[in-house]
Length: 77
Image 1 (cartoon, one colour):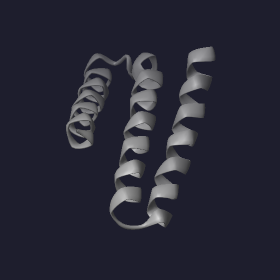
Image 2 (cartoon, helix red, strand yellow; image 1 turned 30 degrees about the vertical axis):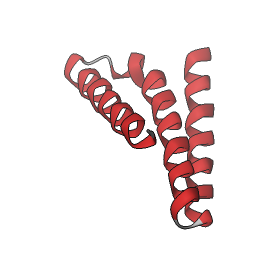
Image 3 (cartoon, helix red, strand yellow; image 1 turned 90 degrees about the vertical axis):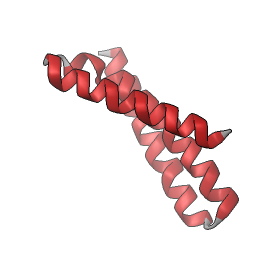
């Protein structure tokens, strides 16, 4: 189940980033892209925590928190 969500979010992130670069409005979509990236990092952290190392999972969680704060700051501005 997590693998399907991970692939779905990855495709959404790539399409949003590509559209932002193509249309020249990457600043408008950046907050949404970072929010999706934060969710993707949480899912990757859960998968890593289940499978192998806890250290790599905590790194994914830290990156997701940073992306989430950056996304929230973009929504506020």
